[in-house]
Length: 490
Ligand code: NAD
Image 1 (cartoon, helix red, strand yellow):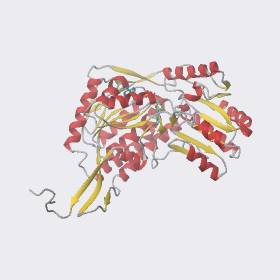
Image 2: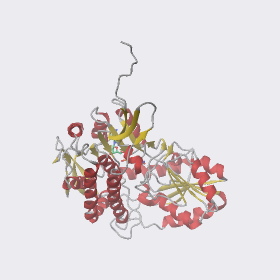
Image 3: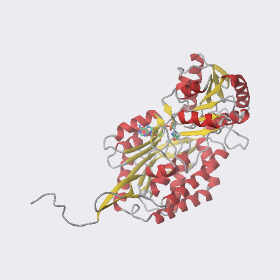
């Protein structure tokens, strides 16, 4: 069994109370680790260290090339430990090996992306009036609190840690209390490559204690949070005290719009991938499929037939195509939504139950679930379920499709399938969402900004935007004629 400790000021520590939390394998219900359960006091300690370390300049004043060299080494170590990390991610989160392996490669690539980016040309100069030269430079924000969810334990950590460190900040990082394993391994790597102590600090524990302290503390300059919209709202309130710089990557209920002229099998295939990849526990999941009336019946039949054939099982079985939900509590929430859907009068086409037998009894498996005959006011259409549950609705025409797609408080992602290029772009431009695809669903790139409109968040991760989220902007105005102004006579 793994013994997971926190990493504060370059030391591995238990929490001050010595409390531990059991970490379970969602495929078997077995305890795989015990994690130090921190509280507000542990968080305060880590925050104080991050503050002193930032103010010392030991990291922020290194050259970009020096900081980048550490990040490149982290990427190398991630790759060297890819197999171990993949197995641990599957044990902790439940995702199939092929998904976990991809996450580890992507995490290494993300470190390399920001290591490269931080050494590239930066800033601006302005031709301003008078004998002045004006320029703009970027500086680190300071102490950054980074709080992440459980659905991509390693990758979500890296999306924040890589740009935050590249920019010269110090960090207090909190993984999800449900899935801390691979982030502890990442901090082992951070130690191995020799990042100065106090720069990167890891505190484990609940959102209500550790997360709340990080969000509230006046010693923290920035919060970068990924998680649910409800939590995002609480963090905004907590962060108001010292007007923290905040970035929020929140939930979604994303539309996947399929026109009759789409390549049919491609659309079905990506629609399945859009909702059932990650067992539907993906913020950008295509959880509302909208299909043009004339192909609706054919689409529904083919989609349900393929959904029923998805091989659900433990993530360490190479044949598994979809793993369990992350925890018992989350499985119960998803099963509740299925009951709500039935009560609301939606038609259950397939799935809708916990899967047992064939070695699945102790795990948290829910069958791929398809609802249709839904209306836009139903909770299963409006609320983020975050599981393998999709609704399929039909639309009459382009305007109708756009109206349905945008009928949500969220605005994270969306896709359009059609062979008409002009229509594809017309519709995608009307969808109020930050991440979109045409004739595809889910490809995500370290180079491109990630984030949502409306209640899906504030700011963007990844790409150049993702670095700027961890930087302040400073204008420097230089007088080229050093003499008194003569504004006041005496
Ligand atoms: P969550 O909001 O419950 O928890 C996320 C993190 O916030 C955890 O570390 C948790 O401990 C912490 N937290 C909880 N309450 C807190 C508080 N009051 N103050 C500070 N921190 C607190 O989310 P989850 O259940 O772990 O993850 C699922 C959610 O994450 C979904 O809504 C999903 O859409 C969202 N998500 C969004 C993105 C994105 O990029 N937009 C990516 C992944 C997941």
